[in-house]
Length: 171
Image (cartoon, rainbow, N blue to C red; front, side):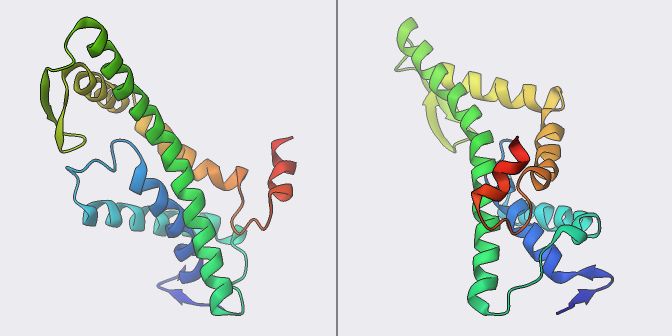
């Protein structure tokens, strides 16, 4: 089944969008509550359309049933959420370290507005999470995150059926 729109294969773009959308949903800096969901969705869509021509040869054929196609999209979304969650875990570690530092130096009750969580947080935790976010953009780490999204297709191929297929690439 060949579905194309303006020269872009729709099935390739849909599978790429599933993984990239899952990553952008949780990626630090891109998934902050201050950024509207439509902007994040549009960025993920544009990125997947831009990558579709280069990665189209790696895309498996669409499944013959609706359940098979849903499973392919769900597995790509799960892979994207796991990659984005791993990056989000780094920023959460900074906030946790800030809470521990605040507790140890006696600033546990000093609260301030946390723009990354849209609620109040400990002073040192907010400082460390904002410092980490600012350093991420100042040093270009956000580009490395996006390169990691593209590189994830080398490590975990599109439509990988089982872990033994992925284990061969790790060796």
